[in-house]
Image (cartoon, rainbow, N blue to C red; front, side, top):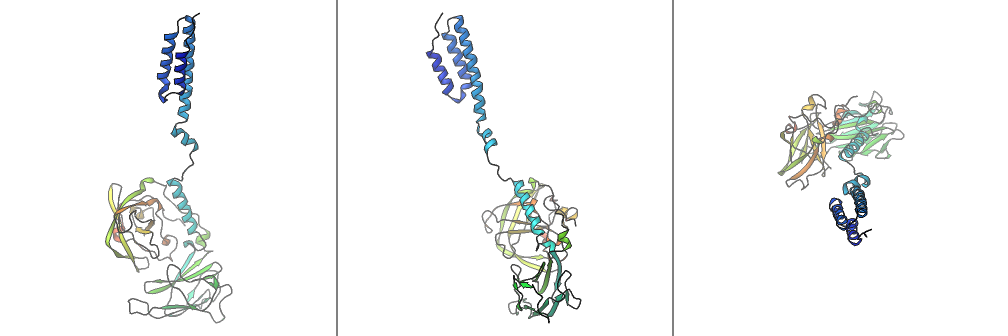
Length: 371
């Protein structure tokens, strides 16, 4: 019987097991050729055939293992899931509903009363100048308005003070978390003096040249009957990249409101983008105390049918190169939200300027609120 030469086969097998990545077909062919050249007997040929079959099976096995270890396959199994755009949007929408339904959220707003110069008594009793329509004491206190509303540099600043009724402040009445005391109130939109009695909160705000008392009740029917908001389904096509075109210099935009007043807000530039085949522009403003946020007040064709008619709002971060340089920013219209006026008639909402009334239907974001 002829002896099988082992050295060439050993070298081929070694190369096959430890060689290059492209071993699958070329190395099997090499092994078969080595076996054919060295086998001299029928038994040798049969043994060579067996080895060829062994080599082929092992090649398939190693190829399967290599495929299993390919980067894509390994990542599918072991990579930690990353938060997706849809997850972030869902979390934002959930947070918005929580804020809206909070004990001091917009669903609790039950009154907006204008203060007159002089004394303004308030409480649930009918003999008050301002009657509170919520569960509260009959006589809570008095607001006094003195001085002239500032309309120019020479005008004197008005003062709003809180005074107690004849029997004293009701028990548990607080101002900014401390027991109520007589004196002037802080009047600003960022952190005004807050008068509270159990679930009732009262804040005096300035609107134009007048003062308004905002009344919130944590037990309001609007809040207790809240069933959630209505949204369009998430749609990535309404998340667009916009070109930032700064104004040089920035100017002041006069923004109308639902109560007939105007707000003078800084307008730093315009965001230009393409939607539905149209090139559009939106002009944001910057609200007081919100230097890191752009505030877009807009209306689109859905305002006639499925979204709040007056306006919707969008808040975004700043452009990538700042406000005074050309750059880029993302407008995700899936985060469009209704103004407070959509939930209560007692809010003083800004309305979109003429240039922010878009001739397209943005079927994204918050829909009309169903009571």
